[in-house]
Image (tube, rainbow, N blue to C red; front, side, top):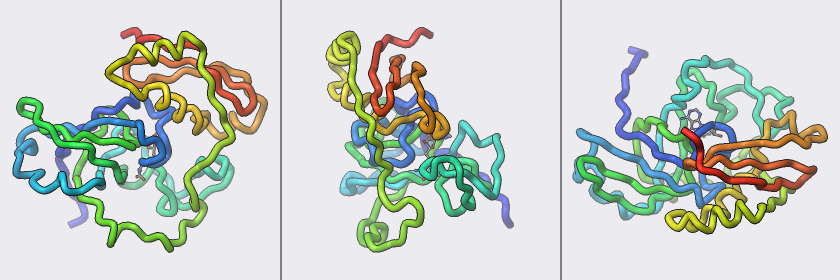
Length: 236
Ligand code: SAM
């Protein structure tokens, strides 16, 4: 018996509408807020009884956007500059034999929304629409191993990037009253330098764009500096 069928228990609603610019791991951008929406038969109050006494949860999810792209035994981790290959099981790459991801996220609350149950989350690294297979509480006594060897990923990725915003961009963020930390969220996303590794190795003066929430954000790169030129509501 080596084939299994699973049903998603819920779906992620995330500000990340495309893979580009999503952080490599959860917790790196605490302002990345989203929700896990459980629908019947998984939206039963009983199924989450006691969950609010945990601050963090493990989510087991499907890399649904890339699931049909196959896998290979060797991958190029971005933090090694995209030049060195490692075994897929020595990485957290998305292209795996079973396209399953694992993220620890902060639980900010549980709310009922009609027939649905909504788990409010932050620090997520998940694409909008990600199907979640399972939820488990994070247990510090068993899951936090401060002395564990961490291979080529011994610390959170750091960059020397600085970020500035045009007056239009700052004003746009200020007006989004439902998203009070939008500006800092965008700044943190850009501080991690979402460009592909090969772009970082040469002089790059290109303009870039990304979608967060329903906003289109444009910026230019000059050395170690990102400047947000414009933010607009995304055209449908
Ligand atoms: N924390 C997870 C893990 O370790 O399994 C994900 C790590 S993976 C290196 C992080 C990347 O997964 C993100 O940068 C994003 O581009 C990608 N990602 C997130 N949700 C995805 C989805 N539903 N389908 C495909 N890729 C996704």
